[in-house]
Image (cartoon, rainbow, N blue to C red; front, top):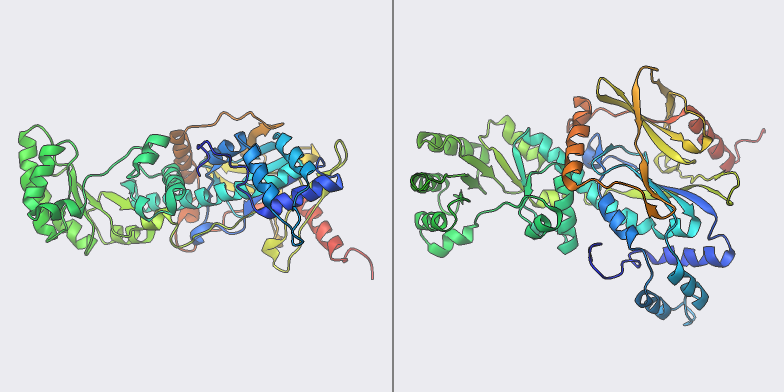
Length: 489
């Protein structure tokens, strides 16, 4: 269930996290200090950026991370292939006494982020770092995906209102709540999900469905009855029978509303040629004096279709986006990963770790990573990943990890900020968590700080992300050592 519920969520993990934890405990390395980073390898939706989201849910889960007696009782039932208990009782006792002592840094909710740079850094006892992996990935992957989709949809709408209408098509209760939250952070103006409205403070919007019109049989009568019932909420769905006739009926009832001191808020189109019908509907509304009435459109919209309708001159002013937003329809998973990058005995020197792969994109980066973002005239111009464990101020030169001939140096006059901010220290939250409205505003400001070529949908410009030159040298050396290529022939 959702992290705000009362049940323990400590078992929201893959079994192998617990088997590895048991192994760390038994082998005596559970308390070794480790560093892990959460990142993704490819910007979603073939786009130029992503919007970090889900930190609020991760904090809610981390704040309540305790293995209850019920959790331990369940773990006692798990068996190995010999039929014996999978976990020793002494380990389960230790697990029940464990309390979070991690240092965690993360990109604030609503931050623009890019492939291969850390969204979260987790540092502390190896066993604890391992135990939080699955939940962090679960909570940040989906939220980030939907927030990014919402930002793209809102960009296509070019300042028009966007409403999230996806509850009925969302992936269960938790999926719907997560999607509504993330969509709002990404920029939508309101949701049809009333529970999300209550829980998160998102504006809730909605009027009536086709069933309302069909229940009366007569469209004009149904509009009149709705207007009598809720005169301050009249957006009429006009495509049950004949769309343009439905607009005329809406105008007729709108005249009555005006006489009563209310207004026709608008009409909604849910089928057909939305470009043509919206243009014709606008003519009818204007001819009847409803020049400020909105035309709301729905029907499997996404950023591509909205962009197309805009190019066709559609007269739509409010966009209801459901299925393709809350399910991240064209990319159902972000593909975030969580990798160990350094380990040490308490008080000792860091031993850097690297994962190799035949695929260059899957070779990990060592170190205690931080992301330094450079700005010029308020526009983001590059993100440099550096090793913060070195203590010294990093250089201002970065190298493309996939093409070492591509380098970029940032002038001394450029301003910069470090992306990852402290969230936990020693297991205690030190972060002043922003509200959802502040996170939404952060998304708006951050997306606006990207060059338009990075924001475009087709073949976006590749935003510069690279490794600080000394970190790049370390990574290269570790790769060569791991492949046995550092030795002379």
